Image 1 (tube, rainbow, N blue to C red):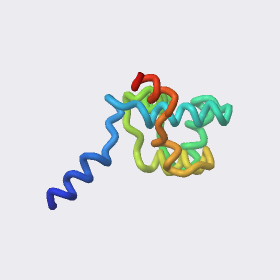
Image 2: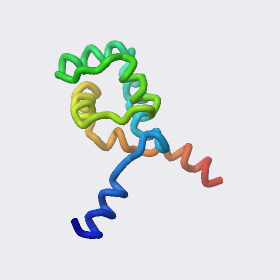
Image 3: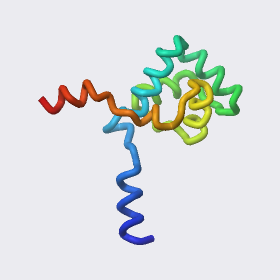
Length: 98
């Protein structure tokens, strides 16, 4: 593995413990679609993703990292692409800069 590849891997990784971006965006998408946690969990299980409501809640709170299978299923459930999970809220970003 080259130094360039190591650098890309380090910058591409999102740590939910310090950056709750993924969980926050997943929750926003769920609320936008007027779904409850248990509704999402039921749909995820229909997509072959075995997850409990407690584990799903931890993903939204940023305590657990979502699996790739979970993200793939959520793109189908929310009818979105992967970019929707990684969009930063520009209004909160602007507040931090002030």
